Length: 115
Image (cartoon, one colour):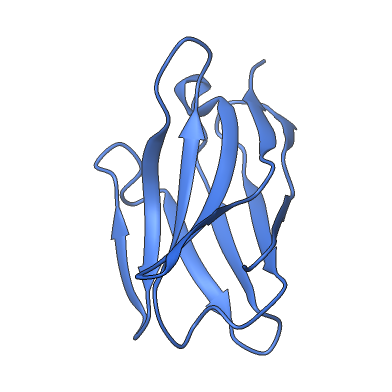
């Protein structure tokens, strides 16, 4: 099973930017999908962005035009570039690797958008 480790979270002011990384222990780009989810306090975990084998990307309406998901095949790493951050973007961000054989989650990284 692929192990995932997120990094890059932190405290940022509204309008600021962060880049999250999700490093995988094995190859993740030959099949399956990598997703970035977030969970705000008291709310359900929601999908914010995904990249599917072949490079297709999808975004939640709330982050379109502000977030960009990308991957580095050589490093087995997926990134989430977050710009124009808003307080409602606050939450724990998790990456997920989904294939027909199962699903793996990282431990999460906290993102706090506050002045």
